[in-house]
Length: 397
Image 1 (cartoon, helix red, strand yellow):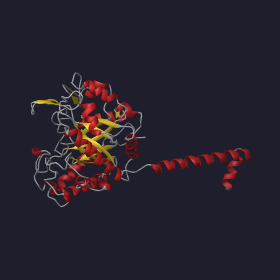
Image 2 (cartoon, helix red, strand yellow):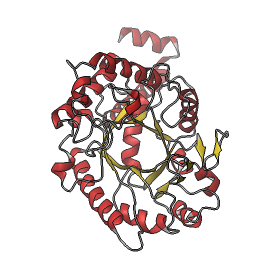
Image 3 (tube, rainbow, N blue to C red):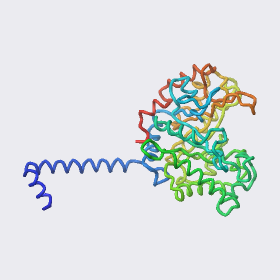
Image 4 (tube, rainbow, N blue to C red):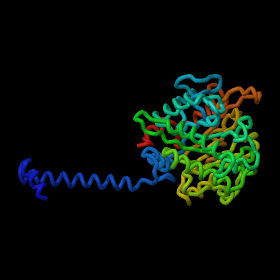
């Protein structure tokens, strides 16, 4: 206190002393408000997550009360009949706005000298696209169609039983798998914003694990093996590689019927931040309602689980190839989502004509596409959020 009195005398006596006391009280008040704000922030599963990642996690919880974000895979890299044109996306061509969520995939990064992903997108370009989307306020999600450790020629579509066990601790391919994770960590760790901050990523590895088409699928490994794979991956990237800009997205196929079935391979609340599943439209939605009714049923189910576990949830992949039904957006898809407060819905990529499939392969409309006008109506809805909508939300601050 003696030091304080000397300070007061030095700057002008009792009146100044009183003013300084007011200033100190004010500053203490500001400090307490700041502490309270920090205390109110919920932490994701990674308790050491970066400030921007924590802010995104909390922002997404609030944003879901307003509506859901629209996402598109590979949106900035290519579209129907174009590739690598600066600032372009098929979605933007139609509505004058970018998607709010940008989907990317790391499949191929594990290969020796792998410089492009499984869809041919160079990782250097992907890094640039991710930064562009982030700097405009968009959200980044990344999946990983990981090659089979028994051969890149099999890709992710190797259903050999025992593959997961081979990459888990003690397995014959465990060292190889750690080398793959080193490459993943190197890429994700290199994603930086303009201030040098790590760009937050919704990471969705080992997706659609209840299906039978990937080497981590239901028929290729046990529930315990899958959980071990997930938990080791989280541990290695967080603890060994010091990655703290990931929100972890648990993802099943769209074939579950109960909460228990959805959670059969769930790795634990300490290992996931968002719950999701993938499902696609097949057949004529005007004649049968399978997609609409079953997607709504399952989203409602996952929404209940998310509420119980205090998690985010999303429709992480969906679409209707070539969108032949002109009103699919405001009828089928909107009805399938219903009143569920999902964080986002992501449509798959716009490849264009696919030589291997001998058909058009795209999931978002482009100029002249039959569902264009309906997509514009979908865009104009208050609850559908695109990049301009969320850029004002300052999700990372």
